[in-house]
Image (cartoon, rainbow over all chains, first blue to last red):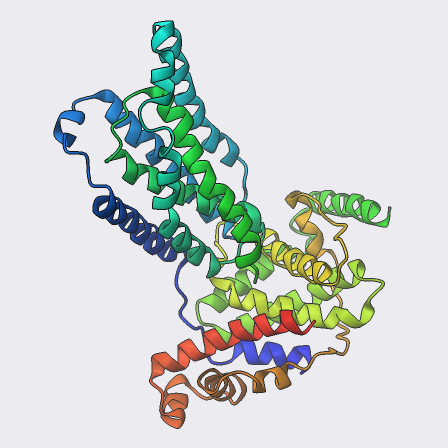
Length: 212
Length: 207
């Protein structure tokens, strides 16, 4: 077929209505968040003292940190799913919440008694926390990759990493409703690690799955 | 070296264009012109969309030919693959975005993908501000494609092939095609859409 004929083929028949990128992202994120929350509620259970915990500022920081990163992940994913979109500003957007939490964690460690510092960092559940977050994010990762698959990322590893970060953040958000830890250093280290794992998985999967 | 000097020439060309006063600038800037054609096309004006693909195709041909001097036989295949990709991904164009950035990101992706499949490393990892290079030259002399898209179309499953044949090739309306095939109208639209996506995937496999 000559190129002219191909162009004729593509032109005729009018515009086929397509899913708007924003709708596709929204659908994926909503179903992913729901999946992570349900997975958490049915396997781990929401912490029993949720009402009491909600009185503590630390509980809200534990929600805000992954919440802000989830938002940054969505912004990154939307940019990376459009060919030629500007990426300026994304590194700062991603680094800012991490830096803020690390600063709070650093301050908490400095002010604590030296003997209590390991407890602030390791808490009771450091061995399982990042892995549970990663596991809770698995359905979200596939939903986010599905959203990207229908769009046109040109930097596949980066786009996959953004999808992974978003899903990791959604997993952490769900896990925060179960997790009993209430120390900023714990949050800064293990939650970050838990979100980093799906981001790395997303980068690897993206290189393979997102080709078009 | 040639790549570098092309880049410099491109920037000079851009700078020169900035200096030309609107009164002497007879042709509208290609970026604006193409953008308008695409937007009108997305709004449902088939002739504008046709013009968009034709003009973009000429730019793409020059763009690919410059970079694939050692493989001239492959140029037209990549132009076709890129045009199909532009069509399939037209919903990812954001009207606030420069058209040239969008189109050249797709062209570069397709070219890089092609070179990677052929075990060659792309030499043109320029940053996006050089994207304007895509619109610097046109080439209307279409070469022969080595792959026949019409033959590839035959390999699609029936519920995608028939809607494409009726709607896209024979120019029937969606409702006429639906009546002919016994599919619902939305199934015809979905069939065309999925079929063209699958066609693009097949193009990647065959090279």
